[in-house]
Amino acid sequence: MKLSPALPILWYSFLLLLRVSQSEEYYDEGVEAHSTNMTESVDEIDDGCDEIEDLEDSVVCSVSRTNKLNCSWSIHTLEAGAQLSVSVSFSEKKRLIDSRNQSSANGDGFISWTIGGGQEKSVVVDFEVLLRGNRMCYTAEFEEQQLNILDPPGNVDASIRDGNLHVNWDVPSSSIYAHCFDYQLDIGDQEKPRNFSDKVEHIELNAAAHTYKVRMRTKMSKSCYGCTQWSEWSPTVTVKQPTYRLDPLVIALISLGIPMILLAVLLILRHQRLVKVLFPPIPRPPAKYKHFLEKTDPLNFFHPVPTTKPEEEITEVEDAEQPPVTSH
Image (cartoon, rainbow, N blue to C red; front, side, top):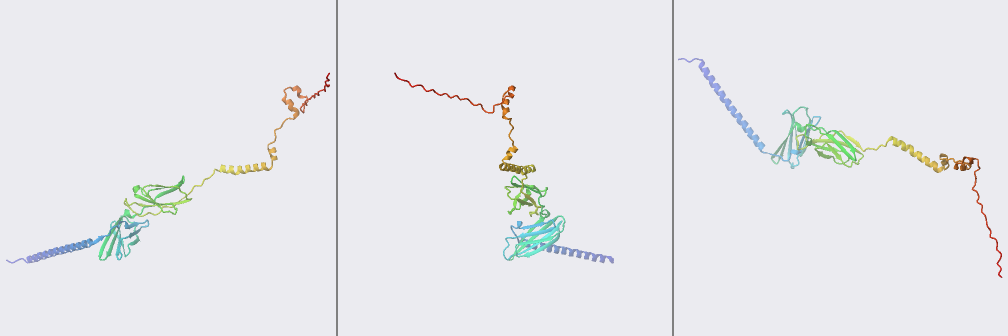
């Protein structure tokens, strides 16, 4: 029985496919093993990296209104001789856009550059410290809400009432709880700014200065989620002590009345004769009519009125001398 020529070809094809499939299995197993070894090595590296403690409040990142990314850090626990490496990565919608690196032996540093105005911004800051063969790491992440600096308080108003300075303002955002804002008030009196939170009014007692220049700024408190960097200062509001104004009518009366009074007094003192001119005596009837006016009898009108008081007649009586008495 003679075999068909097609059978050997099919047989060789089957053996070739079997060999290829075995080779792919060996390749997959090798890749998987290599990946496992790489993962184990990375884990070993990560496990060998000690975390830097007390660094959470030492790293700050923010984005200004001009889309400028600013990241600063201060590691006070950095020992002498340590080498610090910092990497700042900026992403939008979880896609890496740009990154910057910095290496120094100083624990204080700053990185800044202008970024795009995209959405869902995020920043990751990686720290790595090498000291005597030991490796320490720390990672700080900032989401968009933590990066955007708040606007300054709005409608800042100031006035002086009853000797006290009254300052009131609006919260920067109505979508955030009022107790989440920290405020800083500067009144331009050469003293440190006043810090307070959870209120929209402040009273500065005993405002003795003549002029106050009021401005404010704000930030998110640490108890709330958001940017903890101070905002820009609000526009300056200038307040002056009130000046008391007199009524124009009162001013006119005083300016005209006082000179007239002084002039009258001066004339009276220097010219006594003016008194008689200004205040003449009351007219009186002649003496010859005075007697008639005092009597009710009209017949006595033509009788002369004695001009002088009638003289009283005095009769003198002289005692006559008596004759001497003779004795018998």
